[in-house]
Length: 382
Image (cartoon, rainbow, N blue to C red):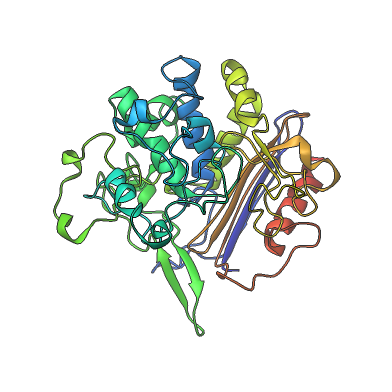
């Protein structure tokens, strides 16, 4: 572990714990702080889902409609041409889409074109599930689902995904955060905490060693699009461009603000209830999902629902009261959760985790450092 931090709040929303430790691996060896922004990984999906669900609540799209209506072209699994893929399936990871062998599709290329080409490739190039896994029934976690979600959002709103999220959520909450650094101030970028892993002794940065200067956006560009300006991006062309699946940059203090926002509900209480309602639940007898060693047993619309299986008791005996999402990429392991029964919140981040052979937790499929941070938060916020 290279750096870690946790913030927890009690039932009344009062700060119960805030603790950080470790350097950021920045050239200055600046200590990791509550205000150091980092790539939060798949917690990004839940935030993306919130933006999408606002459109559903406003009846600008139908959760159970055929996504082709908003993509401008049909999208079906090659083995199931009669099964319409819906936004609900995308948000719940039951669409039959997978992380292709060449994921992500680079900026400058179209995602729909890549999926069309994959149909004729052996194993669909990894972009579609096996023909034994029926869309709408089988759960398998996939970043591609949220790339498609972002494309739908752009086509429905006429606004680029990163800008829509900034205007509808981040700016109203006064948060200096953004997908792939979009809209994030230079001062915030200067405090960035890069993701790191240890290789043969030394720590090696994996992401954000040098964030682009404001207002530039960190884009994974195709070789033939090296100078392709972001302003030339066509709405609905490539949902991976602004990383709705994992590219949100924010700090622990920002995560805490979002956790409080979700915990309070307020005007969005009905929206959040729809998000957290279980859409998929593991049925081991029917083999209806890929659990990833017990990590997933129940999932809503962009929201994890712990406590349904043998290895997803992240919060102990009352894990089912907790809603939220975790993240895992480039050395960062993160989590943003709130307790729907009593209002407690816990957010955490761990940097420097290896890709494999992680120290196992005691009661869950999390890693030992993650479970230790959660237990620390629970002890202070009880």
